[in-house]
View 1 (cartoon, rainbow, N blue to C red):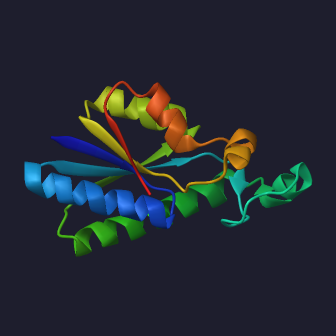
View 2: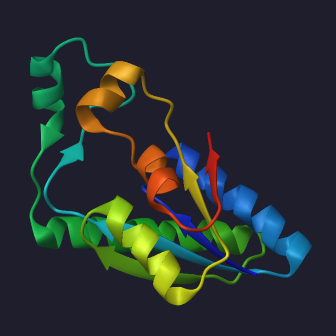
Length: 149
């Protein structure tokens, strides 16, 4: 079986990778780790909930393509190192664009059997303002998605 694990540098995405590694071990599966570099907006505010739109605006920053690409490469390298610690030999792929679209489409195009993604468990209010990538992948994907906290 072919498993796709989407990472974003969060503890939850690391948990998703660890969970996928356990399942890959049990099913003699392979893992590909992806990061979708989207230079438009990134949340820099940590895990504290937003209390106002001003708060949300202050936390969201624009980034250059080069900065986002380097961040993605660094995250993929860290995730591959973590996978190696778990005994997994993984492939990595840097995608470009909206994470929801790119991850879902890549999974379809490459014939993956399942997607694993972390979810930070933000409040409903925060999800309404900045969205939830995990939730949107579940809604868009045509294969099973496992969401890990």
